View (tube, rainbow, N blue to C red):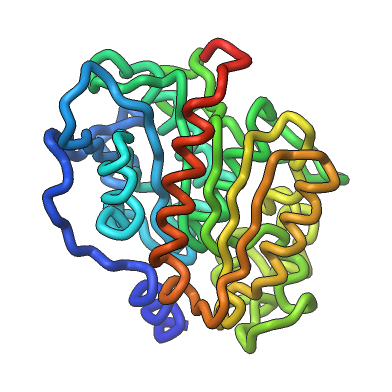
Length: 307
C-alpha cells in the first residue's frame, strides 16, 4: 500500500516553483481553525490589475495527503497565471484525517472563502473555475456536478456535501467551469470497466480508504462520492482529459462520465490522450493550452446569473 501511494504521489507532485506571479498570500486558513489541512495559498498574475478571475486547483494524492497545496502550481497553475487568472491552491483533509464527505466540505468551504474575501485578495468572483488531477479531479468534478446540491440521499445513506466549515456559510459554493484531469468519476466500476491492473475494490485501496470501507460493500456511499451521481442539466461546462495508458485510474471513468454529461446536455468536451499515463504525457502541451483556452472561453461568455 505504501509503495502504491508513493508511486501515485511521485507521478502527480511536480513541486518546482517558478516565479510566475506578482503577489501571493500563503497559509490562509479557510475554516477558521488552526489546522494546516485547512490552509490555502493565493497567487496573482504578473500582469497587474484591480482584480482577477479565479481558478481553484486541487492536488492529486489518492486522498492520502493533507499538505500538498501548490504541488501542481508549476504544471497547471503557471499557464493559468500567464493567462490572467488568480490561482487558489488549497489543502484538504486526507482519508487518514477523515472520511468522505469531509474532503468535499473542505473544497466547498474554500469556494465560499474565496467569494467572501474577494475584495481583500483582488479576486473577481464573477468567474470561479476549478481543476484538479486524479483525486483532485474527482473533487473538482464533484464541485461541478453537485453545485446547488447541499445534501443527497441514496437508499439509506445520505451525504452532507456542503458542510458548515468556516465563517462564510451564507456564500455560494458554486463554480462556473471545471477541468477534470483523469479523476475517478464512478468508483463502483473502476475495476469492472477495465483498463488497469490496479485493484480498486481492495479494502486497502485509496478509494476504499476514502469511503471508509471496501467500495463494493459500501455501494451507496461510494456512489455519493462519485461525481457521475450528481450530473444534471444545471452543471457547469466540463473539459475532461485522460490518458489511454493510465495505469491507475482507467480511462473508461472519463468516458462514462462524458457520456453521462452529454446525455444530460451539459456543455462538455473529452480528450483521450494517446499514450498518456497517470499525469505524464497528459498534462503537457497542447492539452494545457486547451485547458487555458477553455477557461478563457467560459470566462468571456455572458453571465446568466449574478454571483
